[in-house]
Image (cartoon, rainbow, N blue to C red):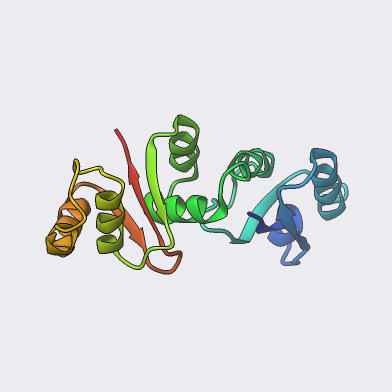
Length: 164
């Protein structure tokens, strides 16, 4: 997963001049340091004036910390990271959930009834004879899943539940 941040020279901005650069993260630390030096010149402070990311980024956040976080997030599936960002909204919570491994995920689903069907097929509700499978009410199971903390991203076609 890649994100883009616009790093602006804060001193020039305060003088009414827009001096900055779009940077794609993650990147090697020395490359990021060079990008910041190029933007700042002899000035000392930068701000993040825009971003393209699945999570919120504050104007005065440390771009090096964001870069380090992106290195961590890139160890995981992009759709899972995007879904957790959508669900949790906070980059730190997403990293914590991923590193703890305390989640269940189903891919390529259209709604929670698909999850319910897959769970039944996997035997998560105990052994259900194949002849009885068509009689299960997957819609009701899906409603229970939703109340049980399952998050669905229709756009990403993924369902996630954090275990706590």
